[in-house]
Image (tube, rainbow, N blue to C red; front, side, top):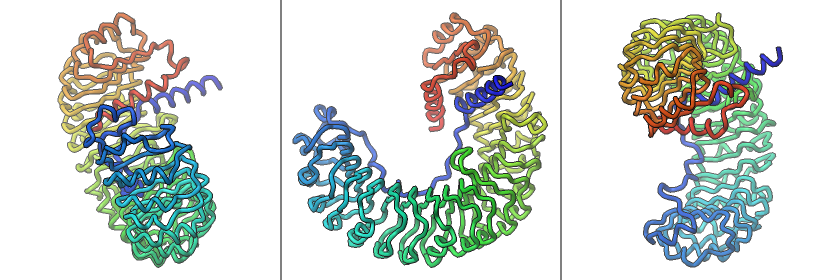
Length: 577
């Protein structure tokens, strides 16, 4: 029994690792925006010999074992960014004097070194905007000269010896400072003089040991973004009180903070537009949440599956007050229903209620006419809700089953009205028990990704070639007996996975497969009809295609190698671009 269970779990893990839909990301400007490198090629020291002096903008000297700058670097006057990580012998005073000869330098990374102070010479870098000092665990002083440069962002992650009060005192003289990262510093508190950082907009305090915040944090007139993720001892009620008078705070991240019950005073943070409460072991949401009438993004799901999941059994009906809400993430809770009042959320664009306990389609979703992304996967539906067919602005629909659910909680068929969703680009129906795809599915002329892994399909629609924009088709672990002769006409198709279809005679469909020269990746693994000769024929006929053919004898006995998983995911990422 244990052996059978182990095999079932291993099968599920392999399926999830090797083929998962790439879901769209709801973008949000974060502090990392300030620490991004300029665009362009990254040169190493060995590349400079043949490089034109005007072409080098980014130079990476990490692990270069240098104590001073090699003289030849100074002729490259267009350098904008230099990375000097992990050069433990670095003579920081001399290096800063040398860097001052590069007039366009605005980005400097001195992370993972061993100096104990940032000296006055930093003031010589007259165009410096971004400074990274991460993981300089011995640094205990930053010169006041840092404010002689137009500094906009400073990264101080894992700089344990710094006195934060002194750092704030120094940086308070930097008039243009917009972003500070003090994450992973084992901080228990934040000094009150944080109020003196008048220009500050972004502050990262995540993964510390903070229990409370000073009320003076509300005095920062420009603070827009605050990250408190991973401060597991935090007193949420005190923190929300400390921030209550802020007139500018738009983004608050308090995920993984072990906030089991959301305090009512969250409603005092009126300017909030983005609130992240994921992975808090949360069991109750207060009505105060509904006072945040400017909120556009609300995250109540999880970050890593199985870790600090929230356990919400209901959402307050007053959520209807959040009329500006565009994204709502409720993944991985214990919801059996959504309140009818969600019908008032008519600006909703992105809704994720996956991995809950829903058995019926929440009627209120039908009123979300702007919704483009809907994830209802991993619930307990036994039928595909026809009401979804009226959401004609959808471009992504995830309606996966949950691998370990019994068949009574899975969908057996699709309604013909699925063809009404003509804007769909991604359709995912993994881990259901669907036996046939309706002919109307070929109406989805904009479809780019079709995921029907681990179903009971025996045949595909003959007109499948009408999906002219289809770039990815995952048919892994079905019961396919043949392939339509029109398959080679899928001119945009780049990835085809027909692995683990045991009834499929690969020799029989070989004439079809060898015509699909447009493919970049073809997976025929775990099929009893795989032979060396067949694989050779495919590779000769499809010279530009990565053919994956793991023998069925190796299934479960030898898991897919990590390099193969990485290769497949890179292919998926490539077609997304």
